[in-house]
Image (cartoon, rainbow, N blue to C red):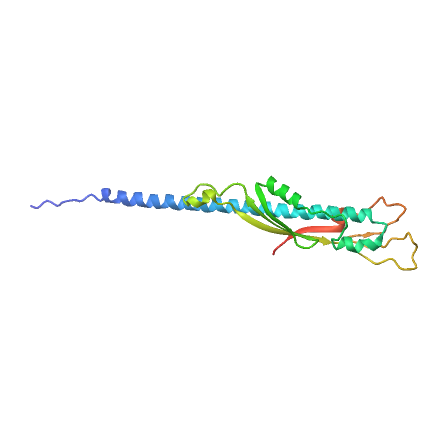
Length: 199
């Protein structure tokens, strides 16, 4: 009577198991690297958005201050609402400040006309260590553009109007300004809107 030989497959399955586990571990690390890059990129975009908005808001506040200063001279209003106030200074310093507060450096700040700012930032932190060595020295960059939109219109004062009469200012609400009682004036956000745009 012949004896049947039995073969044990357990030893052959172990290398396959190790290979599968190693492959899954590699995929997990790769997904982690992708996640790191995405978080870093998101941080850069957040910093760029904040920087652009900060610059635009600072210019908006300057324009509103110019309007208040010249409120009794309606001939200057239109220029101010077009962003051409006489004392307006660049607000890129404010963009740099907000970029720093959000973990980034300001790489570029370009006023795109008197009522718009385009900024570019780079994150201070790299994407971090991963399976791809270059990520240790790679920093994310992002761009953002914010615009200042005038909210008000007005009719020029008629020639026959009283010398101290001011035009009605139509914004999100109407402002009937009394030159003798200028206590209730619009705030900067009543005169101008600031928002991000896609470029």
